[in-house]
Amino acid sequence: MRRAIPLLMLLPPILSGCWYSTTSRTAKGIKSISVPFFENTTTEPSLEISVTEKIIENLVDDNTLKVVDPDEADAILEGNIVEFRNVPFSFNMDLDAEEYHVELRVQVSLFSRRLNEPIWENKTIKGDGSYFLEVSEAGLTYEDALAEAIEEITDQILNLTVQDW
Image (cartoon, rainbow, N blue to C red; front, side, top):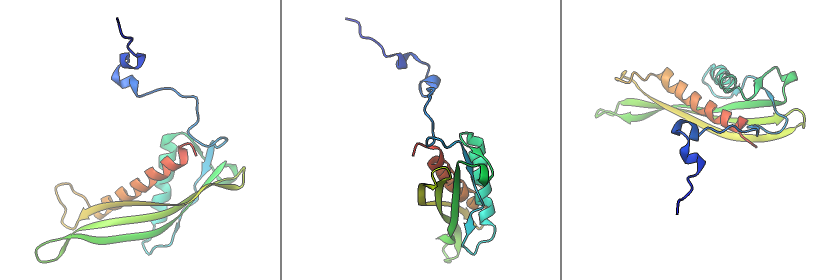
């Protein structure tokens, strides 16, 4: 007796993971978003600019929600950078720090303007990155570690913002 082969197994591997869906990746009615500059309650200057700009860049690249002014938005993404740490992570034989670990923590909330209520609120998101004082073959610097931490945070925020709630 012949066994039926599921259609999915006949598709080329590149197509098998991609299916068209008519369901939205966002909450019903949310098509646009505004992202005011995050607050920065840390002592590290300008983090709010880097974090907010990266979130907007990720939202624009994702193209699920339109980024607009607050008075035109269906939802508002608000956040606060609550922690910044740049701490020694590894030491040499003389107990001098060789590697540092940059850590960021933000609290974010997404509010529906139409419903005048939170979609989700007070989510704590962390990001981190490492760098060496002596530039290594990888060439990781403080700026690279900070960018890695911000990227991690903004990716998590994007996932929270465009997934079904």
